[in-house]
Image (cartoon, rainbow, N blue to C red; front, top):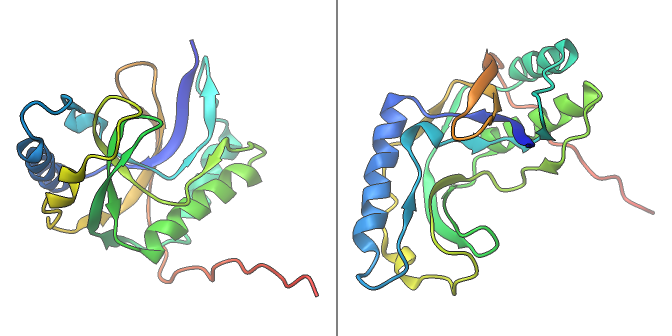
Length: 194
């Protein structure tokens, strides 16, 4: 059975308390008679920075761990807030979308690039960081009641990230790195064709 391998940020105890508040608001806003929500456990909450892939066993080579350690030195600690909720029909996920945060996006980009430098071709780049709170059935029309949920909770503190492996029902950390950068890297620029 294949399992997911990916770098991710996981919330602290304070962050989990804020997410529990937001999750409760989602549950309260869900009208009676609406499709039921399937809650994620607090220990499952995370922001995937990029998706490395799936494997029967985690492939945490020394080169991959070193590359993630190097990425952590280029991104400063930062925080982000939740802008809104969304429903993703293909997966049924109810996700919390951060407000635009250049540092969080830079962390996603740096982790993707680190995997590539280590000789691993990541399966997916994260262009829109998100945090899955719960699930609905797949393929539903977008629930309008999600727009009524108050997303104002305390900012989330990003001090580091981990390489996570999902062996089924939980996430095992195969490495963890504090963020020690002082300034954000310059975003990559696409060269003009002419």
